[in-house]
Image (cartoon, rainbow, N blue to C red):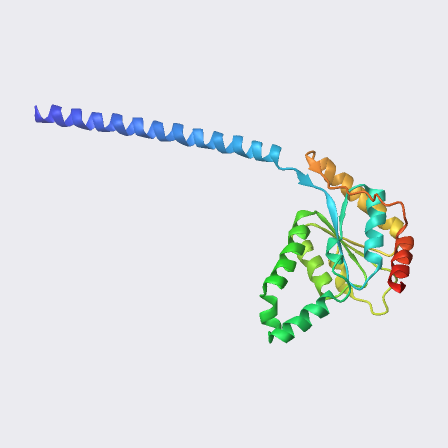
Length: 226
């Protein structure tokens, strides 16, 4: 009698264990399905942004001019908003921090420096292509290296052949000394990205002003004289 009762208890325990195992398998399958559906929904909602982040020097007045030409021919976003503070932005920041009594290390941790860094990094991460316009300084080379390290496209556009040569520029996706050749390569790269990411979008901000950049510059100089 005891043996029969023990066998019955063991059988019930095994049945219960099998039921729990089956329930766990069903729950696991349900969670996997939910994860797959969530990923599909996320892929549908999340658009792939196509555009170019133009890297360069705040002192290089050709940066916004090149950005405008590229927008017109490529019809994608060409980001150069970082250029707006002007050629002396870094010097003013340094002088301000000296007045505060900050060391360079302290200044880099300030709200101002952190916000500028995060602003630039956000847009570098956001766009899949960078073009470094030469001549560029330490920041430009760091940004290019960071982007290449992520496996993205990073090009260098020289205004002329440099006096000092450097073999390490071979890290770049490609180098260009001619704007037409740069544009041709960018068109190809953009077309490839559009094919790879059918859900692509771009913030194409086409110029609305009819004046040419040189005319705008002349008008501003005349206004300053007055």
